[in-house]
Image (cartoon, rainbow, N blue to C red; front, side, top):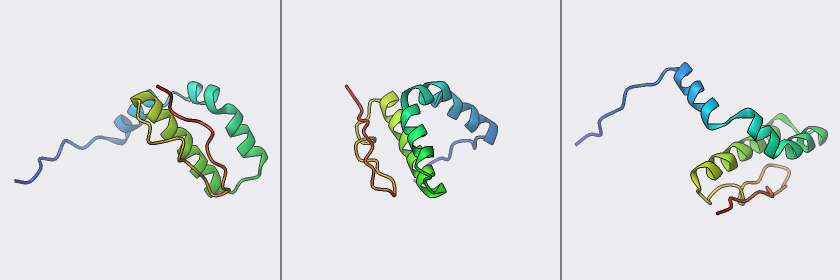
Amino acid sequence: MPKKLSAPFTLEEDIGRLKALLPTEAIIEEFGDMLQQLHRSNATERERLLALGCVTATWGARRTRKKSYGKHCQHETGTRAAWTVSD
């Protein structure tokens, strides 16, 4: 039996959910040092995007109490993320 598809969300709804899940001020407060270091290192655009993906994945894992992100997150320069999800 085919799985019933849920109603599609609009872009505005998805953006609203993202803002609720990833409050900018909290991310900057927690990961601000890493973000500043990333900008000082003259990282490429790809490296910056990968590192920011690590930040958001780690933040999301902390909010949902999952341990699969953060400690394994690594970007192109080989810098392992120093954050882990605590219990």
